[in-house]
Image (cartoon, rainbow, N blue to C red):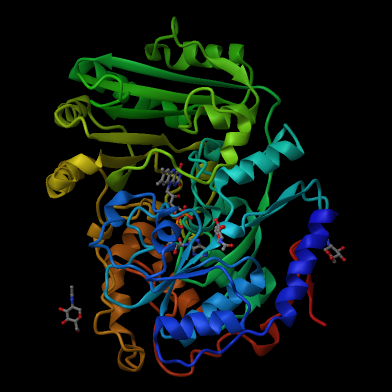
Length: 567
Ligand SMILES: Cc1cc2nc3c(=O)[nH]c(=O)nc-3n(C[C@H](O)[C@H](O)[C@H](O)COP(=O)(O)OP(=O)(O)OC[C@H]3O[C@@H](n4cnc5c(N)ncnc54)[C@H](O)[C@@H]3O)c2cc1C
Ligand SMILES: *[C@@H]1O[C@H](CO)[C@@H](O)[C@H](O)[C@H]1NC(C)=O
Ligand SMILES: *[C@@H]1O[C@H](CO)[C@@H](O)[C@H](O)[C@H]1NC(C)=O
Ligand SMILES: *[C@@H]1O[C@H](CO)[C@@H](O)[C@H](O)[C@H]1NC(C)=O
C-alpha cells in the first residue's frame, strides 16, 4: 500500500508540475533553462565537472566511451514521471534529439552517443528504478509494475523478495535495463518455459514525443505491440512496464560445465547440443559458449561451456541428461539445487561469493570494448561445417560465440504476435562476440574485421533471404538510417519517406514481415521522428499524420497499477 501511495503521489506531482516550453533556439542552455523552469534538478551540462562521471556511469561498451564518440549536450536524470515528461519536452523544444538510457547496454552505444552529428541529450532513467509487485491483482496471477530504469537485477530481487516461487522471464545480466531490454524482446533462461520478457508485458506507460502519458488503452494495440520488441529509442520513452510474473519451483537445478578438447571433439559436442537442446522439456535450458579464451583463466585450446538451468529437482535433471545428453559428461557435472533467485546470481557473471542483494548493484564492474553480431539457425549444421567453424574460432581467443536454445514456449508464439519474429522453426540463436581491453584498443579495426569475416564465413551455414538478427544484439553493419540530410520539412514532406524503403534492408532482418506494421505504428505515435537513432523505424511521412491518435485518448491520468482515470 505504501508503494501504491508513492506512485499516486508521483502522478499527482506530475499533474501540477509546470512543463516549460523552452525557447526553441536549439542550444544546451535553452535546455537547462527549460528544465530549471520545470523543476528538474538533476541536470549535468557539458562542461560541468560532473559531466564525465554522469555520462560514463552506465556506458557498458567502452568502444563508445572515448573522445571520438559524439557526446550529449547534457545528461538529465528525471526523478519522476513528471520530470521525464519535462525532459522529453524540453529537449525537443531545444532542438535536441532525445536519447533515453535505462541500463546503457546498447551494443552500439545508441543510448548515450550518436553515429550522426545531430545534437542530442541523454535522458537517463537511473533514478526511475522502483518495482512494485502485486501478488494477484485481478485473478490474472501476480504482476509487477516496473519503472523502466530498473535493472533486471533490481526486478528479479524485488520479485523474489515478494515470493520465492515467483519469477520474471528476461535476460541473465543483472545490470541490463528493463527499458532497453524489454523494448527489444528480452531472451533469458526462462524463455523456453515462458517466452520473452516482451511476451510477459501486460501494460505499459509511455511518454510520447508530445509529452502525453499513455497507457495500453490510450496508446492502442499497434503501439503497445511495437514497444514490446520493435527496439528501444523509437516510440517514445517507456516510463513503466506492467509484467506478468510466473511460477517457479522452490528449488531449481543449475550447472556450468566447461569441456576443453580438440577442435573436432568440441565440434562434436556442439553438434550433439544442436540436436538435443532445442527439444529438451520446456523446463530445461542448456546454452553453449564456444571459444578459445573461455574461461579467461585458460586461454589455450578450444572449449565449450554448457550452462544449464532446470526448473525442478536435481535427480530429474540428471535423469533427463542421462537419457538425452550423456555426452555432456555426467560424472563431474555436479548440478546444484538452489532457489530461483540464487540461480540468477549463479548465472549473473557476478564474482563468486556474490549474494542475492548484489543483484541490485547498477554498476557493471567488468567493462570491455566489444563488437557483436547475431544469427538464427533452423536446423543442425553438418559436423564438417561445425569443425571448420570451430577451427577458425580456435585461432582467435578474443572471440567467442553464445548459442541460446530456442524451442519450447518460444514456438508457442506466432511470429507476428510481437515485432520479434524468430519463433517456431528457429532452433537456436547465435551471438558472435569479440572483446578487448583498453591496452588492445589500437587493434580495434583488426578485431572488428575478424568478427565480420567470421560472420561472413558462417553465412554459408545459416538461413538467408534474409539473414536474420536480433535487435537487442544491435549491429550497425546491417545498415543504418541516414539522417544527415534530415530536416523534417525536407524528408517528412516526401511521401513515402524514402527512408522507409532504405530501412527495410536491415529492418526485415530484425523483424521479417513485421516491418511494415512497425512503420505504421511509428507513423501513429511519432510522425515527426523525434525519437530516432541509427536503427530506429522511420515514419511514413506526409502531412496530417500528427493527429492519428484519437483526441479522446490523449493524456489520461494513468495510475501505476494500470487503471485509467479519465476524469
Ligand atoms: C552484458 C550484456 C548482457 C546482455 N544479456 C542479454 C540477455 O541475456 N538477453 C537479451 O535478450 N539481451 C541481452 N543483452 C542485450 C540487451 O538486452 C540490450 O542491449 C538492451 O537494449 C539493453 O537495454 P538497456 O536499457 O540496458 O540499454 P540502453 O543502452 O539504455 O538502451 C538500449 C536502447 O533502448 C532505448 N531505451 C532505453 N530505455 C528506454 C525506455 N525506457 N524507453 C524507450 N527506449 C528506451 C535506448 O535509447 C537505446 O536505443 C545483453 C547486453 C549486454 C551488454
Ligand atoms: C543525479 O542522479 C544520479 C543517478 O540517480 C545520482 O547518482 C546523483 O547523485 C544525482 N545527483 C544529484 C545532484 O541529485
Ligand atoms: C546521406 O544523405 C546525404 C544527403 O542526401 C548524402 O549526401 C549522403 O551520401 C548519405 N550518406 C550515406 C551514408 O548514404
Ligand atoms: C488501482 O488504483 C486505484 C487508485 O489508486 C484503485 O482505485 C484501484 O482499485 C486499483 N486497481 C487495481 C487493479 O489494483
